[in-house]
Amino acid sequence: MLRVLNNKHGIPRLFMISKTYYRYIWLLNLLLNEKHALTLEEICKRWEECPAFDGALPIRTFHEHRKGIKEMFGVEIACDRSHGNTYNVKNPEVLDEHKATKWLLKRYSIPQDFATFSSLKDRIL
Image (cartoon, rainbow, N blue to C red; front, side, top):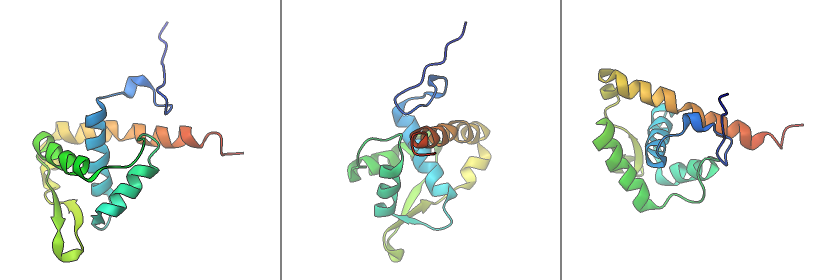
Protein backbone atom coordinates (compact mmCIF):
# COMPACT_ATOMS: atom_id res chain seq x y z
CA MET A 1 0.00 0.00 0.00
CA LEU A 2 1.28 3.46 -0.98
CA ARG A 3 1.04 6.03 1.76
CA VAL A 4 1.44 9.70 0.87
CA LEU A 5 2.73 11.88 3.67
CA ASN A 6 2.34 15.65 3.79
CA ASN A 7 4.86 18.20 4.99
CA LYS A 8 3.92 20.89 7.54
CA HIS A 9 2.27 22.99 4.80
CA GLY A 10 0.04 20.17 3.60
CA ILE A 11 2.09 19.57 0.42
CA PRO A 12 2.36 15.88 -0.43
CA ARG A 13 5.98 14.72 -0.24
CA LEU A 14 5.43 13.23 -3.65
CA PHE A 15 5.86 16.81 -4.89
CA MET A 16 8.81 17.69 -2.70
CA ILE A 17 12.00 18.99 -4.27
CA SER A 18 14.98 20.77 -2.82
CA LYS A 19 13.95 23.83 -0.83
CA THR A 20 16.39 25.96 -2.80
CA TYR A 21 15.08 24.76 -6.17
CA TYR A 22 11.51 25.33 -5.03
CA ARG A 23 12.42 28.89 -4.05
CA TYR A 24 14.02 29.47 -7.47
CA ILE A 25 10.92 28.16 -9.22
CA TRP A 26 8.61 30.21 -7.02
CA LEU A 27 10.54 33.43 -7.67
CA LEU A 28 10.79 32.79 -11.39
CA ASN A 29 7.06 31.98 -11.66
CA LEU A 30 6.19 35.09 -9.67
CA LEU A 31 8.08 37.36 -12.05
CA LEU A 32 6.94 35.56 -15.19
CA ASN A 33 3.26 35.73 -14.23
CA GLU A 34 3.20 39.42 -13.32
CA LYS A 35 2.10 41.93 -15.94
CA HIS A 36 4.56 44.51 -14.64
CA ALA A 37 7.97 44.46 -13.00
CA LEU A 38 8.03 44.20 -9.20
CA THR A 39 10.03 46.10 -6.64
CA LEU A 40 12.04 44.19 -4.07
CA GLU A 41 9.50 45.27 -1.46
CA GLU A 42 6.65 43.75 -3.50
CA ILE A 43 8.59 40.53 -3.97
CA CYS A 44 9.34 40.34 -0.25
CA LYS A 45 5.68 40.95 0.60
CA ARG A 46 4.56 38.11 -1.70
CA TRP A 47 7.24 35.89 -0.15
CA GLU A 48 5.91 36.55 3.34
CA GLU A 49 2.34 35.88 2.18
CA CYS A 50 3.29 32.49 0.75
CA PRO A 51 2.55 29.79 3.33
CA ALA A 52 5.39 27.63 2.01
CA PHE A 53 7.99 30.03 3.42
CA ASP A 54 8.66 30.98 7.00
CA GLY A 55 9.73 34.53 7.66
CA ALA A 56 11.11 37.33 5.56
CA LEU A 57 13.22 37.15 2.40
CA PRO A 58 16.62 38.68 3.20
CA ILE A 59 18.03 40.91 0.45
CA ARG A 60 21.18 38.82 0.22
CA THR A 61 19.12 35.64 -0.25
CA PHE A 62 17.11 37.32 -3.00
CA HIS A 63 20.28 38.21 -4.90
CA GLU A 64 21.70 34.71 -4.37
CA HIS A 65 18.47 33.29 -5.79
CA ARG A 66 18.76 35.60 -8.83
CA LYS A 67 22.27 34.28 -9.40
CA GLY A 68 21.14 30.65 -8.92
CA ILE A 69 18.26 31.07 -11.38
CA LYS A 70 20.64 32.41 -14.00
CA GLU A 71 23.06 29.51 -13.46
CA MET A 72 20.36 26.83 -13.38
CA PHE A 73 17.86 28.03 -15.98
CA GLY A 74 19.83 30.58 -17.98
CA VAL A 75 17.16 33.15 -17.15
CA GLU A 76 18.26 36.57 -15.99
CA ILE A 77 16.29 38.53 -13.43
CA ALA A 78 17.25 42.11 -14.18
CA CYS A 79 16.90 45.26 -12.12
CA ASP A 80 15.55 48.28 -13.98
CA ARG A 81 16.95 51.25 -12.07
CA SER A 82 15.17 53.74 -14.34
CA HIS A 83 11.76 52.49 -13.14
CA GLY A 84 12.30 52.54 -9.39
CA ASN A 85 14.53 49.48 -9.04
CA THR A 86 11.98 47.01 -10.35
CA TYR A 87 12.79 43.41 -11.22
CA ASN A 88 11.63 41.39 -14.21
CA VAL A 89 12.71 38.45 -16.33
CA LYS A 90 15.01 39.88 -18.97
CA ASN A 91 15.08 36.90 -21.34
CA PRO A 92 11.91 34.76 -20.98
CA GLU A 93 12.44 33.34 -24.48
CA VAL A 94 15.12 31.06 -22.98
CA LEU A 95 12.33 29.02 -21.41
CA ASP A 96 10.81 28.34 -24.84
CA GLU A 97 14.15 26.96 -26.02
CA HIS A 98 14.47 24.52 -23.11
CA LYS A 99 11.48 22.22 -22.84
CA ALA A 100 12.83 20.50 -19.72
CA THR A 101 13.05 23.81 -17.87
CA LYS A 102 9.54 24.75 -18.95
CA TRP A 103 8.28 21.37 -17.73
CA LEU A 104 10.06 21.80 -14.40
CA LEU A 105 8.49 25.22 -13.86
CA LYS A 106 5.04 23.94 -14.75
CA ARG A 107 5.36 20.78 -12.68
CA TYR A 108 6.62 22.38 -9.50
CA SER A 109 4.52 25.51 -9.49
CA ILE A 110 1.58 23.32 -8.40
CA PRO A 111 2.68 22.82 -4.76
CA GLN A 112 2.38 26.54 -4.09
CA ASP A 113 -1.31 26.26 -4.89
CA PHE A 114 -1.64 23.21 -2.64
CA ALA A 115 0.07 25.09 0.19
CA THR A 116 -2.29 28.02 -0.24
CA PHE A 117 -5.40 25.84 -0.13
CA SER A 118 -4.24 23.76 2.81
CA SER A 119 -3.47 26.91 4.80
CA LEU A 120 -7.04 28.12 4.21
CA LYS A 121 -8.77 24.92 5.25
CA ASP A 122 -9.47 26.17 8.79
CA ARG A 123 -10.71 29.56 7.56
CA ILE A 124 -13.47 28.39 5.22
CA LEU A 125 -16.87 27.73 6.74
